Each structure stands twice: as structure tokens, then as C-alpha cells.
Image (cartoon, rainbow, N blue to C red; front, side, top):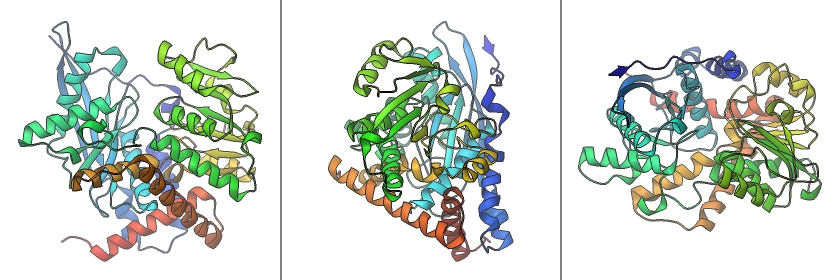
Length: 428
């Protein structure tokens, strides 16, 4: 029996089209740059889009059809790079937006990549271990015409894990007939993964948070209350690193809701609780809060590290944070940006704040190609160096053009891609 792909069930964030947000941000940035109109039009659109419907045999013997996507936004600077997410909220427009943001993110931190993104419309928690392996391998096999260490290198994202990256690597390697560690990043260390990759995005968020605070004279960690929406890979590692650095993490949340303690949460205890129970619900010594309530809690720093479209014109005016550091991609709408900027809140944009993951993915790719590996200390030293350099470049654009940090970061990145495109020229 074959079951047709499940229709997408609209959720609140679906009312905000991520690709429209990405295009609006792009227009704001390009309007301030003196670029050839042909270049502006060219960079707006994804270079390549791939949609596939593929079968997976469930443990019951029933064959179910799933829909997957892979979008290459740009290959101007080099091979495309971007994660794969497994989620019931995946749409083609979401993948388009994430691929575009990856292009700007890679350019901002000066990596020789263009942006890509992939996704499968699935709830990975609803599948058995055997089923999720079958789905991952079949999706990977469908991507064979698109991916290679020199054309497109996937990585984990929401709903995907290092083990799933290992299955993708193995599927590709079995297809070509030899081991190809560099085909994917975010792998387990014992098959060519990099030290520091798992915590890289969350750690990078805190590195950029600390830089923002330092530049505004806020140098006492114990006086800084941090609220984090999202407690997946990015949010949990950001919470852990902020806690280790002496900051007071007062609230965190997952998809079911959050917990709040005005005196600060014991993050190692919270992480142990989540590992044991699978979620934050019921954690002792804290008050329950909803995700909506969490965004407007009193704090100095708010880190949205969940989904796109969380900060909108409806709640931006109620945010009490003085700094917003975007751990997620596209968590703030353009309308909310205007409110935040008018209120004088410092916003460190996603393509800068959460670039730590792709930076260490780049390190992993380089190590795999060379078969020469670095220790964790070197990884984190180079990560911080690259992020601070990108922060400096963004602030130079802020000062030169008198724009907000998001527009400045995108202007910096877009100009780099535009310059490379003009140097290469249009083919044929």
C-alpha cells in the first residue's frame, strides 16, 4: 500500500513567509549599495531547486511517500553549503530563504562557499530508528546528482543529527565506491567529524553576544540576565557556554514551553533533566512560561534560537531585552526590525550571530580534504577569530552607511558576492 505525502498543516509561523522576509531584507540592503541592477536581479533568485517525492517502507510493511527539497541559492563563491532539516513545517519557500541566508552568512565570515539548504517534510520523532535511517538514506540517494565535496556539502540542522550525517556519508560513499568523509559535515568524530562542531553554533552565539556587550561597556557577566528561546542544539549549547562564562541564564524554552527563574537556572541540571525526560516540562525550581511569554521577560539579552518568524510587529514593542542575539535563522520580521531599531535595542543578526556552525563545518571540510585534524583548542581559537573579524566588518559598514546591524551585515556579505560575480562574469 502506498500512502500519499501528508499535506502541510499550517502553524502560526507559517503565516509569515520566510522567503518574503529574506527578499525584503535583501531589498533593504541592496537599496543602499551602488550595484549593477543585473547583478541585484541575479543574486535574488535561487540558482537551483530540487524537489523529490520518495518512498519509505514503514515497520508495518506499509510504504509511505515523503517530500524532500534541496535548494542551491548561489555557487558564485564556491560549492554550496547548508544544513538539512527534518520537520513537519518544511516548505519550499522556507528552504529558499534558508539557502539565501546561508549565502550571505558564508560571505560575511569569508568562507569559500555559496548557500544551500535541504529539508524533508517529516516528524523524525514519529519514526522508529530503522525508519529514520531508511528515510535518511533514501533522501541522500535522491541527492546524489546534486551533492559532492566540490559542489554541495550538506550538514545537520533542525531535526537531524550527526548519526544521520554518517548515514548520508555512507550512502554517498557506497554509491561512488570509496569513503568520502568530506561529502558532509557535522559527522561523528570517529568517521572524520571535527572537534567542537556540535557546540559550534551555540558557542558562536555567545561569542558574538559577549562582543556586543563589551562594545557597549557591559563587562560584568553576573549582572547580565539571558533568556533563550529554543533548547535544541543551538539553544542548549548557548545556554551552557553562557552559564560557564558567568552569565545568568534566567529562562529557556523548547517547543512545549519554557521555564523561568529570576535568580538564574542551573543549566547543567536543566540539560541533565532534558536528557532524562526529553523536555523541559516539569523541571523543578522554576516557573513554567509559554514561548510567547518568554520573549518578553525582563532581561538584558534575548536569544531567539528556535524558528523563523518569532519576533513580529505584534510583540517587538513588548520585548524588555536591551540586546537581541539571533541564534535562529530569520527569527525577526522586517516590521519587527523597524520597531526594535526605533527602540534602540541592539540586534546582532542571524548571519553573524549563528555563523559558528558553518565556520566549524568549513574547518571539518578542510580537515577531511587534507586528512589532517586539529584539536579543540585550535578550533575554538580560529572560530572566535573569524567571528570577531566579521563583527568588525559589520560595524565598519554600520558606521559608513549609518544603518542597523542586520542591514550592515547583509550589505557587507552581498557586496562580496556581487564583487565575485562581476569578476567571474556572466556565463556564457
